[in-house]
Image (cartoon, one colour):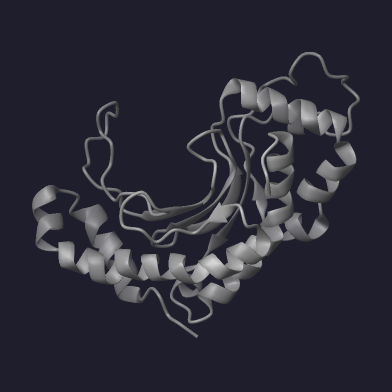
Length: 228
């Protein structure tokens, strides 16, 4: 068993939230590297094999630049919040064709009392939304297995916020999954406790979660003609 994060990792992020300025971060940059970034990179490296067993087309890339890990720096150009840093660390286990096409992904989020794992498509373009809705309509039974399996629904929650107020035009009102066609985001998540994130069983926990989320991601890939 490997413990990647410790209570000190979460404490660092709590302190960053309370001291979200460049001077404080530069003074504690080594702590960030030691407590958050480096352990996350090791976790991503160790997740590569479990992810490969699920799909040869997804990557858990620990590279410092251009890999799975998101930058801790915020893009403040178009935001009213000018805080320079994110008080959390996230990583995307991405499809190999992510730079060419819109593709689903697995996602891991580390934040004090707000960690979670998820998968799917977040804010896809309108044309991608339409393709998925049409695919669901044409393939409802496989959608039932991928997105409505009892084991999935008992553990993970579908993201329902930001859905269309009414079903999109062109689909019969009595369609079995008419409410699903209102979705703008096609995402499932589940929370991870601080104890989960600091446990020596984290890799095992995440590997199991990825396996359970895989059929849903596979379905989205099929809807977009992507390999899985």
